[in-house]
Image 1 (cartoon, rainbow, N blue to C red):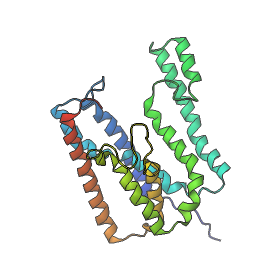
Image 2 (spheres, helix red, strand yellow):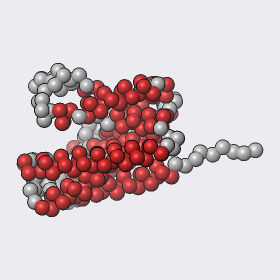
Image 3 (cartoon, rainbow, N blue to C red):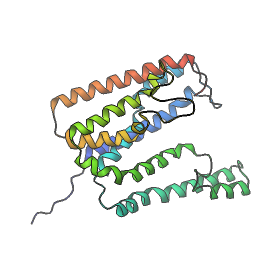
Image 4 (spheres, one colour):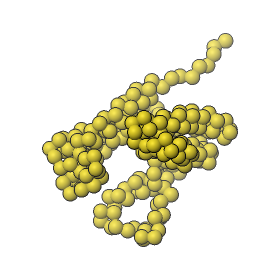
Length: 251
C-alpha cells in the first residue's frame, strides 16, 4: 500500500535562505547611511548602498508571506497556539534574558537594572533589543490566524482580490501623504482613518494564501508578471531612497 507523504516545497526552502541573506544585507548596509546618533549620512557610499540595498527590502514581507503560505487552515485553535506560540515564545524569552545579562556583563546596566529588565520581559523586550519587534508582530499574526482562517479557506477569488486592492491602497498612504497630509478621517487626534484596518503586514499573509489557492499552477505569464513586479518594486524603492537621501536629517 502506498503511503502518502508530504511533498517538500524546495522553492520555499530556497526563498527562506535568500530572505535570511536579505535581512543580513539590509542591516549591514544601514551603517553606510545612518550615523550612530540617528542622523542620515549624505555621502556617495550612502547613495551606492541605497541602490543595491533596495534589492533586499522585501525580506520581512517575504518571511511574513511564507508564514501565510503554510499557516492555513488553522484547524483546532488550541493545538495551533500550542504548536506555533511554543516555538516562538520559549526562544524569545531565552534571548531576551541573554540580552539583559549581556548588558550587565558589558557594564551597561547594574545588577538592579538587570533584574528590573528581566521582570519587564512580559511587557516589552526587557532591555533595548528593538530588532526583536518581529517576534511581537509574528505573535500578533498567530493570534489573528484562527479568526481569518475560515474566510481565507472559503473566500472567492474576487473576494480576496477585493481585500488585496484595498490593502494595496492602504500601503500607499505614505506616498499619498506626500500630496495630502491627512486623508479619509485623519486628524491629529485620530490615528485610525478609513483604511487603518486594512494596513500592515497582515496583507502579505492574505496575499500568500491567495497565491496558494489561485496561482500555484505554472503559467508562462506568471514568470513575466513576476519579473515585471520585481523590477517595478525595485525602481520605486531605489528611486524613493535616492530622492529622500539629500533632504532627510533623521531616520
